Image (cartoon, rainbow, N blue to C red; front, side):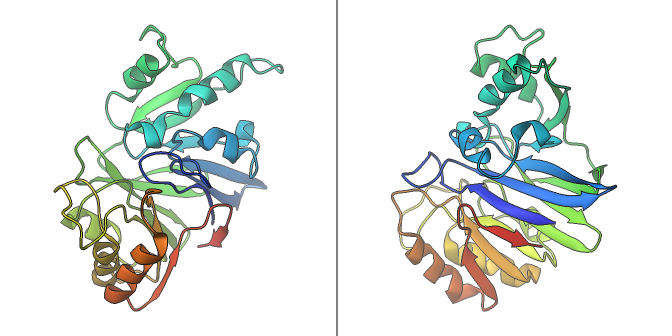
Length: 252
């Protein structure tokens, strides 16, 4: 599969990037399948540089903070009022209550809300599939219900941390990942609040414990220097570690 970083900015859009959004593509059954991991504020505009939004097959939301889900509002408008007519419903997986949250975000009545455009689904307890992709969502440590996502196509495995503090479920989820796309929002030397985010040092340590092949650091807020975060991660992970660069496509 191919991973394109649409937006990598942590907590809010930065001067060079939207908030979180990642495009996954894989060829299967004589066409290219496309899914989005998160669709944070500002991401829908940036997405159009890399793919036709109408060619997306599904959206997976790690959690319901604005920097990970809010551009679903614009996507709703695009699919509902497109000049070619209303577009077919596509699945949107997320935590319980996603449909209500998005209806409120656009000031819609909860019935029908956005349910005529999106087929909202709550993450199941086990794995599920769409086209070539197999997904597994595992609950992680964040102030709201949040999930790390493990995505596989054949033998290739990508793990996306979403937003999380250190927790054993994340280590389990990242086990043997070919690419571990991991948030690193905090600096190790700072007095960070507990149970919210990871530092670069922690992201590297998780990658080491999990035996990940490559670590991509993301969700770094604009107020931090990414080079500092990268340096922290290199202290605890001796493998291939990089900053997830906007507009770059990574082969998994």
